[in-house]
Length: 262
Image (cartoon, rainbow, N blue to C red; front, side, top):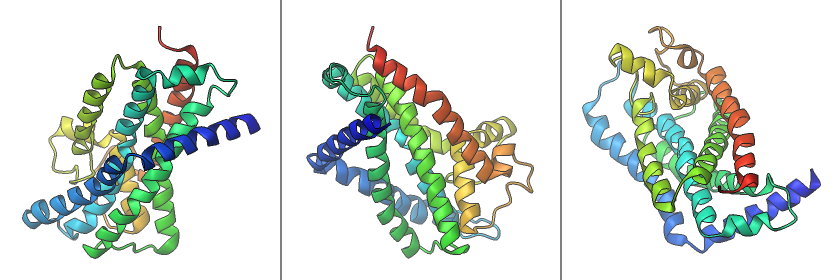
């Protein structure tokens, strides 16, 4: 365990230093969620009327959930870049824990995500978003978001190690942008056609977005409208989705890293 932690800490430090030397990418990851929040909040929000709710109050938790889901894209890109530039092969030659490299990469992603959520939350507060359940609700919501980000980063790491090239990983990662669109992140699912509503409500992002709204004390009618189980029981649904992804992809990504490319 001490070897895993020390080796993982070394990889984490490397990833943070790597991010520090790529300020343009860091700025983009910090500002893009804020830009999208402003766009959706003031462009779409001006045309949407939600009974009993203010759209921007509904939107901010969804945008936070979408940001957490982006661990899929960043994990994929990071793992693919290291794999195809020979960095991963060099790590394999070192006497270090095989779990340390993907663990350090995902932990670094988690830290940068926690930092990037601060300006997003501040802008959300300026737009009218409020946490009605006090500090306990805010901490619970943050915990759900970071756990989901950690889980999606492991999924992305696995897919990045499988990718045939950096370009393929980048294209697939960009395609994940559509996933929050097919969820309850930006709009309630109650008005969707039957089959599409089912798809959206079994999307893990829906459970996470609804869990954050619930923990923040934002009213919603998903359960009353007969939503699928993960959305009708959002906190449990979000925790189960995150746990299932971690149980499946942590060992899968670790084995794939240790085995190397065929």
